[in-house]
Structures are given as C-alpha cells and as structure tokens.
Image 1 (cartoon, helix red, strand yellow):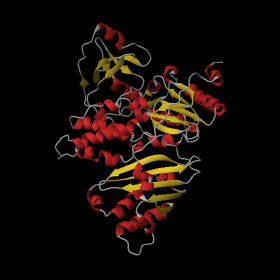
Image 2: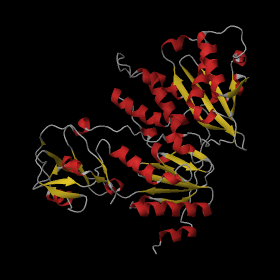
Image 3: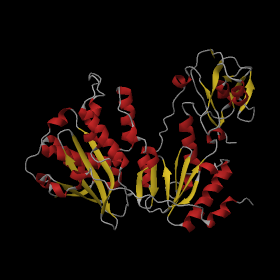
Length: 447
C-alpha cells in the first residue's frame, strides 16, 4: 500500500446525508466487498448514496455522489502532460510496450482526517474509503504526480506516462528488454501492479492515447475514428460541440482544420441562431474525410533542420511543419487558426506573415536553436526584414522572430507549396505484429 498522500480538503456543510438508492439483490451483493479499500463507519456528517454501474464485459463499478464535494474541494494546480510532448519523446523508437495499471488509484491511501469525507451509504450500513477514490477533484492530479515521481529516473529516456497508461519505448529489442526490467523493478518496489490483459509488449506499433505510434511516426487510431463516417448530423449546439470536440483532438492531422470548420464554429456563437445549411453539412463531410484518411506524421528529430510552409485565406491561416530525415520532406504537424476581429481586415501580406508568426509560436519548442526555412507563396515576404517601411505590427513580428529563431524566408509559387495542397493526405498502411518475443519471457518469472 502506498503512503498516505491524498488529502481531501473540502469546505463542506456541517452535514451532508442522503438516503440510499434502491437496488436489486444482485447489485447489493456486488456493491461492497469489505476488504482493504473500505471499512464500515459510524460517521454521520458525510454520507452519500451509492449506485452500481455495469457495462458489458466489465466488472460492476461503484458510483458515489457526494453533493457539493467537487465544488468545495480545493483543486491542486497540477496539469496533465501535453499529449504532443509525450508523443514527441518517441522519435527514433522502434519497439513499444504499453502497461495498464491494475487499480492504480487504490494504491494511494487517504490522509486520516480526510477518510470520513469519502463515506457512502448502502442499504444497511455506511463505508469509508481508506484509499483514493477515482472521482475526487484532485484524484487525477495526485495520481499523475505520483507516477511522475516514481518513474522520474526513466522519464524522457524510455518511458512516457499519462495517468495509468505507461508507454515504454526503445530503439531495439535488446534495449527494450532492459528498459522493461527497470520499469518492472520500480513498479514492484512501489507496489503498483500491471494488468496483463490490457497491456501490450514488444510491438512494432501500439495504440497510445488515441494514436498509433510506430517507427514510421504517429497517426490516428483507426478504432477511434471508425464511427466518424456514420456520425449523425448535429441537430443542436450541444451535438455540434461534441463533434467539434472530437475532431479538434486530432486537428494536428487535419490540413486547414480552422478553414474547414469555420462555418461550424460560427454556429456556436451565442447570438447566432442554429440553422443547418448545406455549407455546414459540406464542412462536416470534409472533416469526416480528413479524419478517416489522416496522414502519418513523423516525429521531430532534434538533429535535423525544420521547414515550414504557410498559407492564408480570407478566414483562416495555416502551416505545416516538416523535416527531411532521409526520405524527403515529411509532415510533423499541421496547424490552422480561424481569423477573428481585426485580423480579418489584414491585407494578404500581413495574413501570410501572421501564419508564419503563429507557426513559430506554436512550434517554438522545436524551432529554437535550429535552422528553419519558411516557404511562402507571397513573394514580398522575402523582403520582410529589409523592406524600408514597416507598420508597428510588422516591427513586433520581426522583433519576435529575430530574437528567438534562426530562419530564412523563401518564395515558392503557390502550386508548389504543400500548404496549399494540404487536403491531399496519404493513406496509411497498417502493420500487425503477433506473439511475444522470447527475450521478454524472463521478465515475467518471479525468483
């Protein structure tokens, strides 16, 4: 059992108590198995009702609702890792293993004076959690901080971790076996356990956080987008928000995402009536097509120089970040932004320049310290640094670029500029690896 780490600090009313929900005999048998994660309580200040949630093929899950607790609980400012940062760590890896922890949250104990605040009611008695329940406001932040702490020696070397998903990556199989051994030693010492049925070992490609990662790069997990083509037309703002929320998660794979989705995001404006028109349906179909045929994105190599190709239209700007890692220029990420307010009135010269500025700000973590070549289809941008007359806005932009980056701007005619042809992504070939490498067998034997 992990040390007492999680403190549930809530400014609760003097009494929170609710009658239990009715349940079947079967649910009542499954609801509470008195073992080390709970114990009976006689506290009467905090007691919430308990229900049982069941899904096909899964064990029943206990759901407890403590009125007001989520609002009252003090929220720790511990952000989850950026997914693009985690994926960027995988450059050069060819072997992957994904570990899913078994009941990881229950390996962290509650602080003594917070235990009574987790009390819940069943038909005949109340129980308290001795370990950290999943749904507390700070549960995710606490668990992420704990995983970062115990795996810190291996982070940025061979491990990326997002909550209870651990991805081990290596350049070859021999190295991978050693990396797995080190990870298992840490987990065993800290008493975290891996669920083998949901873990993968020594694969040439693997699923991680809705993406498929491999030596070739990263692309959208087909299982995550297989239902997109049959996604029904959004009938109200809420359904449109759900669709755009899903699409936006993969926007780095979608060329000209902001331009395509502009008509849809306009429908989300507070004072805009929700009226579905052919242009909206066309935008939805374009996004569906882009998501289901998303290109493979290579992972950035810090030893190679970068190329940016930009483009601008009346309503949006876009760019693509690329590298030549020995196979010609290949995309690392796409970027697009819908123009707002005064930006819509910029002359085309400034819109093209804005696309460059946004690209450098977005990909600053890659571009600083490396030579970057910017290809633009607007000839006058070649002379951005040397033109005799500059607006205040242009002066700010040039100062930003000159201060932080090494770059050249090169004119390239529109029909040769990839950013103007971003809607022609390549299709992806899947690779399936079956079985487990014999080198891994020794990792699962206990001495």
